[in-house]
Image (tube, rainbow, N blue to C red; front, side, top):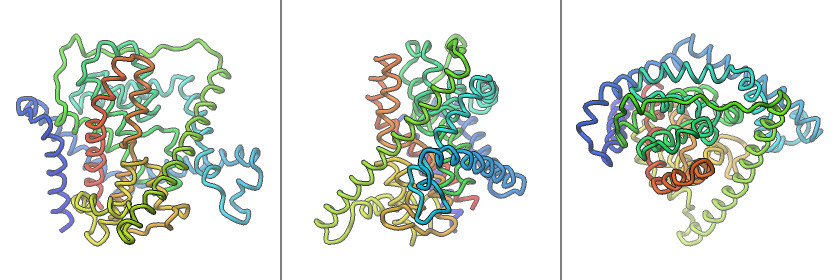
Length: 403
């Protein structure tokens, strides 16, 4: 039964993506690519989640990040002592166990950038991606770059082309950035939710972003417009680079910590106020009822839809870290327990930057490079969140069909 519901849900989410544009002419042009990408998503999902080879690869990746987190723990323990010791009495603070390792992973990304390993990966994955998606080389390059470097950093690599971009191309680039996540925080995700769903979501969202944009915001390119730029390289020493990436990692960790403090406290306040006004129903429970039908369409069993909807809605109104807390002992209301399929669906849904706060992050990053285009992103911000959220729903539905 859940397969039928998931298929209906997939059609609904695709239809919701198409409704704002209703461009039948371009739909006929893009339909073969959309169909191909859906097939690729299903095949990759099956390989990653249902085959021994895929599971071994995902487990190997998770073990690799686990080792990196252990090494990061050595650095954290040196500074914070017994506070960061997992064998000591009491739980290790979330800041030290989950967020501080971001600094070490960021440093490793900087080293791979310096050695020109990541640029080669971005370049050739972008070429392959463009053949499957039917998108321009710039759009494909940006999608891979955003998945590795993050939603803000990816725009720096294409800053010289920003003044030439039309609003539709700018939407495509922004939607790709919001639908993916940065490699620097993947390890942190893996400490909160199951690694296999983190990996699955990253891969599925990469294609899902193009599927939704071809429905929601279709356009065509001329050969003259289909250009890509080689990122500028600063002349700096290895240790200058390393120091910069370490500090960038620290900024990310502190920023996430600040957002968690603020959002968790605000949600607790709103829960208290709404509970007082409604006689015991919290704000998150109300959001859960609103999102329950969408959770049901992804394949979540109906008796778990309100709980699943709460977590999905929390991610949208705050961020993915706040929502992922639901699956940890650090959750203020206690760890949420869902069935296997519901867990797979919800955790896949959470792995992206699709939330309201990301509008400001992306618009601010682009505004610092090209003020008019930053203002343009702010104007279509709600449409951006709408599209990126549909990407998450589509990826979650595919995982639900496979589970």
